[in-house]
Every structure is written in structure tokens, then in C-alpha cells.
Image 1 (cartoon, rainbow, N blue to C red):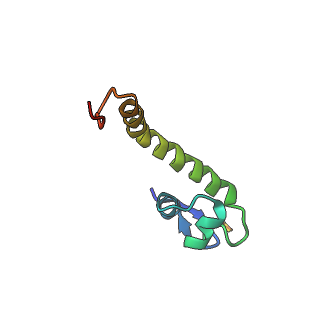
Image 2 (cartoon, helix red, strand yellow):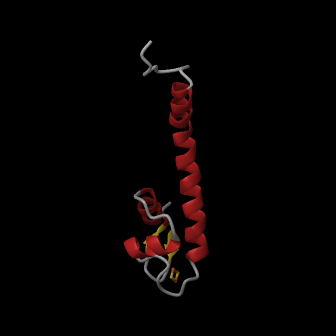
Image 3 (tube, rainbow, N blue to C red):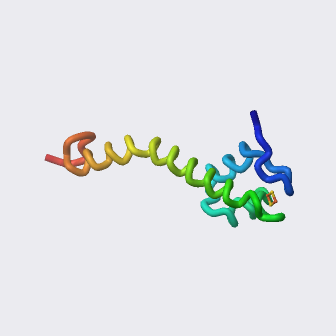
Length: 83
Ligand code: FES
């Protein structure tokens, strides 16, 4: 279900998550991109929670790449060192 999170601007949770994934990393940045949170402001706490949710989800997806990079730096995976 696509719930309307910002009633004032009629913006759905899905749209807010989309702009967060596209780079909006603060409630104000979300407002600039889709107007959510720019009316009465009562949804701003909910937008903040969505930002944290999306960041956590993105962090989980990035973990393997970060781990592979660290292993590569240690010379344990991927190489890149001339020997
Ligand atoms: S409900 Fe989002 S600004 Fe009012």
C-alpha cells in the first residue's frame, strides 16, 4: 500500500523514499525535491524516520563492497598488487 505521509502536499511514502534514494539526505532536502514537509510540518518526524530507514538499507547493501575493498587493500582479495 502506498500511504500518503505528507497530507498537506499529498506526497506518498514511496515518493519520499524515491527522493531519499536519489540523494535527499535531510528533511529540508526532501522538501526541496518533492515538497513533503513544507506545509504544516507535522510529517517531518516521519520523513526523518524514512531517511534513517533508507540509509540503513543502503548501508547494508554497501557492506559487501566495503568489505571486499578492505580485503583488497590487505591483499587478500582481488589483487591489484604487482608481485
Ligand atoms: S503533513 Fe506534511 S507538511 Fe503537513
